[in-house]
Amino acid sequence: MSKKIKKIVLAYSGGLDTSVILHWLKEEYSAEVIAYTADLGQDHDPEEVYRRAELIGASKVIIEDLKDEFVKDYIFPMFRCNTVYEGEYLLGTSIARPLISKKLVEVAQKEGAQAIAHGATGKGNDQIRFELGVHALNSDLKVIAPWRGWDFNSRSDLVEYCKKYQIKIDASSDEPLYSKDENLLHTSYEGEILEDPSKAAPGEIWERTVSPQEAPDKEEIVDIGFKNGDPISLNNSLLSPAEFLQKLNELAGKNGIGRLDLVENRFTGMKSRGCYETPGGTIMLKAHRAIESITLDPEQAHLKDEIMPKYSELIYKGFWWTPERTSMQSLIDSTQTFVNGNVKLSLYKGNVSVLSRESNDSLYDSKIVTFEDDENTFDQADATGFIKINSIRLKKNSRRK
Image (cartoon, rainbow, N blue to C red):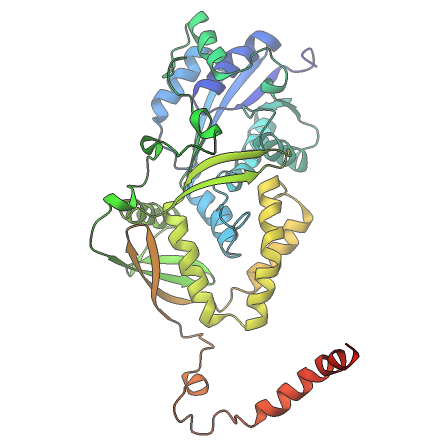
């Protein structure tokens, strides 16, 4: 394989793993390595990432700002389905992988590369997500996954490799080497003490949220405006998708909202404990369900709830670029035409509570639902026949018993 590969595009974060991989690929394949960094809103210094990749020997360094595209074309479509995996996880890592895969393929095609490389381990889900995405978008490209082929067994080994080849990196073999993934939607933490689910997560790992105990003693009220199922305004200010999520993250973070400690079932068959911070997303999910509660037809809402687990599983397992996900997205998006209006919420010490919802497209009719005089809007006597018809089969079954 190495004789055929002359140019490689590496998904480069600037961290320990991919810095080692950049150097290792050059040594192992004697090929040009293009370092590609997708700026999805992670806390990083682009100049430092660029400089480090050049020093290690990248033939070209590309850093692309994808924040608005990420939120508009990936996060928002996912939230239209109120998507959670295994009842809790808001898929912050999973939803970033289709976009990164797409960009890696585009760069490879433009630069004439024969292969794409990534730093995902052989035990995790990300290797699957990256590679399924690449294969779906360009079946001619080869994929190099160093963690599945080299002799290193731990991140401590990588620290020693950096010392050997004088690669400057902010890591020490004596420090906790949490595996961290970060983007505008979330931050995840895995590894070290977190690998023992019987132990509480250290308080110092959380970077984006204060603890609920340390959050302000006064609630904060926010107003989110929706159009066609997507949030477009925060406290009556129209914002771009990335601006909206960034500001919502800040509000949620200071109010202790968005922490999750989860043991999940990986696609590779093992259980994994991870800690996640999804501050703005936690509020966004609550708000979206609230506006849907008055604007969606009941059976539309129930259908969405039925397909959501399958949709979330497709995203989690890396099947974004598939016909079935595309078909499901069309169905989901078709339900959002009238999901317009505003939701007012209270943020208080880790909690998000809905205060009000209003929409010009609301299906809620106070005349029908009222306990007071409905002015003959609803004839309660009609319920008798409704119940009789629905009880026919139940009566038959009861007699048989």
